[in-house]
Image (cartoon, rainbow, N blue to C red; front, side, top):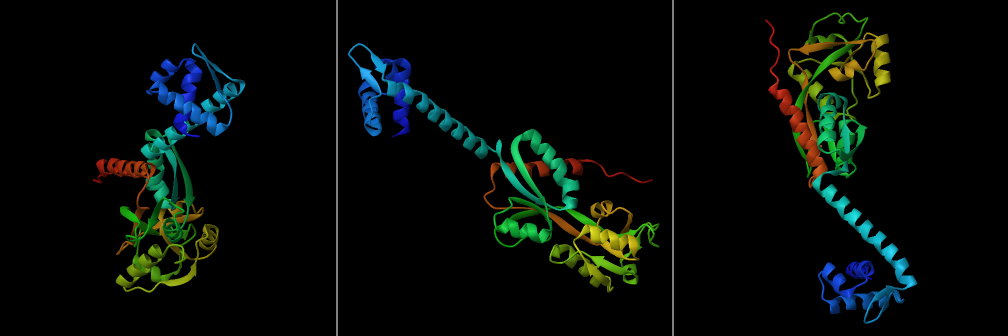
Length: 302
């Protein structure tokens, strides 16, 4: 049973006239009659009673008319859905992100995306950079917002912002009232870092800065558990190094800027090759957010 035969049958069933039906589907009457004979042969039933004066549907033909219309409508909906996905009007994007990306870029970009492409759904996961990269390579994510250099392989990426890291201490700590500390001062305090398995780029960036500053950090703990990190900070004289965004989530702690040198690392947007139109729309939204921020002049302090 062919799709074109269904269209021919419905034209005759609606018009009950071979001449008008043939014109409707842009066929000659002999070609239209052939379509109907083949359809009846495929189904093994007679769908129409034909005389020299009129055409009538058989009981089986009337039932088939209803079902054929449903099939045609479903096919049209499927065609429209596919075209919408191809055009980026609908679809879905699987997005991994870290906290700084969410607050600095992703949240406003998703607001823009919901305006320009309201039919695009997003699935969101907050994950470490290493896990995001692995899921991107396995095809389980479409886009990731993560720390690190340009990934190897077929993944596409670009740096969108550099994230400065800060020292995080409990609000009882002797540094809690400081405006800033030098990186070398960190050697005076026991230090807590993220686990390298979770975010190798951040871990390596911190140790690279320590090497440039000719400083050895006294790392007493590595964790990616914010609950554990907060408890250590508020109950012991420990310093953590992380983003300002992470510091804001840790109740009872204070963020202190680090200088001389300032530890920082690139935040990248990474996506799979042959990205869908929906992913391209998200990239455009990110670009729009970054362009708007670049156009805003920095405040001057007199």
